[in-house]
Image 1 (cartoon, one colour):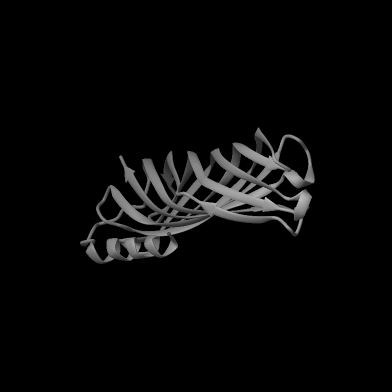
Image 2: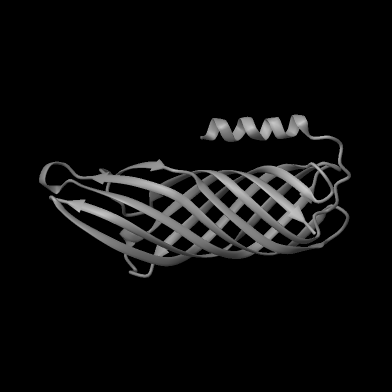
Length: 201
């Protein structure tokens, strides 16, 4: 998946014609598609193994105000799905496995800096609210559990203005999740590498 993301991004850059880029100010809506990598936070057992499957995808909407000729900053609201994670732990009679799916709503800030008339850098970060469900199997017994909580997210990106109102690029984001159960073992994080596209109006 990661190799495919990089290949598509390079192809978009090679095919793009000249465009007169603006600072990125105004309303925008974007979409993301790529790969997610999950892991347990501090306190997780060393025997825990995680294999991530499925595609990560999301969308965001927001507004940026120009702060000079190249910099724009403003709020954004987003939704992100992280695919699925297959988790195993323990050995022998203590072994277990789970299939976990997670999604999050985020609210934060979005920054865009025009390096040249066509190329830009971006950054984002803020607060998130996540929810997830898991199918557990331990000692032959199966159960389904739901979880939710809050956390923080941050990310960086880069891309190309194909036209004055349409951009393509890539982003790398990290999400830190904590559970409402207030347990050290319930914390985890998600990293995403995604192709991005944005329309401004």
